[in-house]
Image (cartoon, rainbow, N blue to C red; front, side):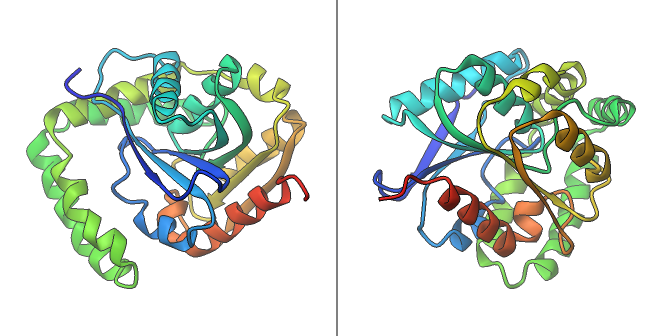
Length: 258
């Protein structure tokens, strides 16, 4: 492992704490506009994972707990994006960090399309870094138009592409392997914390029309599952303003009354 888990903390400790755990890319490079949309109403903690090829989901959870403890952060809400929904369930099961609530963004329990995960793992393992770079530069050209009103996203695109190294590709492949092996359904059935979820209407990666019915039937503490029509799988990026509004409302609804 060539890196350690990193944290960036925004906001005063007197505010409710929201810990953002990133998707498969493993870093904070695309969440800038969502942070801005939160308007300083929470203490926002961003996580970047190490490019590890050996960590289990339990190790990811331990890494998050250790990093938060190092910053004196003992409690807060967890915002698990896509892959990190699996880290969230591990944190819930461990009961070391005092979790006030769980929010899934393009997240899931047991992935509803394991064949798709295995296919993505095979493609990620087989793609060359040169081809990956070409794909990402193509994505950047589209994103410059798509996010022209989101300066934080545009500012971070260069960093996002720069971080996509050969080791980063291998780390993403390893994370896909962890997703394929993960089955936290028992944890979701027994969770005694408020649970919320956000999905984009067009999400072929984690289809909400399979995830939402399972959660409604099996997760007794699911409070709300919101589908945003203008968003895709990266709901915190493609619908940062409505996503932030929902997250702030959910946190506010669960704050102690004076």
